[in-house]
Image (cartoon, rainbow, N blue to C red; front, side):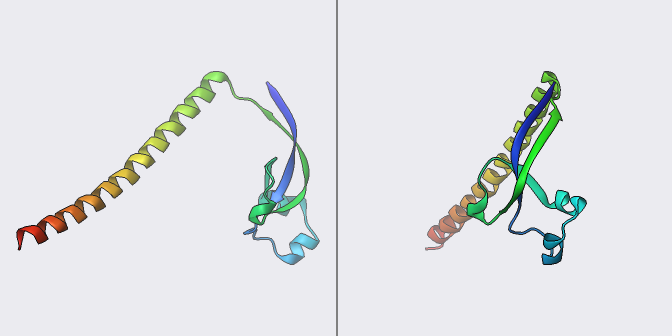
Amino acid sequence: MKIKTITTAWISNSCPLSPEQILNPTGEILLKATAFTNTDMSAVGWVKIGTAIVEFDLIDRNEMIDNKVVALQAEMQMIKADAQVKVQKLEDQLQSLLAIEVSK
């Protein structure tokens, strides 16, 4: 299924475009630096450069579900890794305090 929408084109505040490239843009240069979203990005320093008509082919439902499962599993792994780091820091602090208590 084809999806078609109109959205806003932005370049980020960390955009690598030089002033010359902004004054005399080529499609290829701008396209590499452009993000498309309907969210107003001006509050975070992004520059609105226009509107775009975006059309894409929607992948099939099963592939979409598979992609979401993979993304959720990756997020779970990141959360577990971050939590393990925090737990290790707490355990280190606890052991340090217990060592002080024992040496009294």
